Length: 112
Image: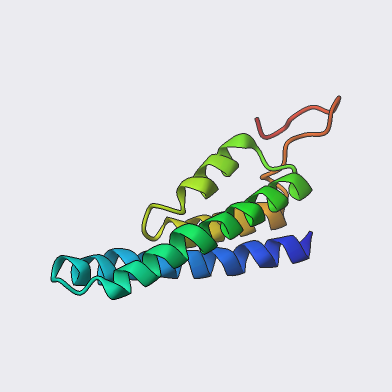
């Protein structure tokens, strides 16, 4: 489980950084008639980083039995600037504290 969490944290940082570069550097450059950087970062983020990030989210969610709303927020973090960093912080803390998990079948849910 620690390996999946580490992979998620790395991908969250890389994807979040690429998204910030896309929004705050590449898009303004593209508007000012310099589209090359936007094409490179856009393709890198959309074609390579997003699917890898989603795979790490799915792997972490299955291994740690995350609740459905964690999945949703982690998936939205791909397109909202700074949300990847915020979600990484809260997901890591919740997993380490054990509050992000769904209860086992048949056991009471103290957090719900």
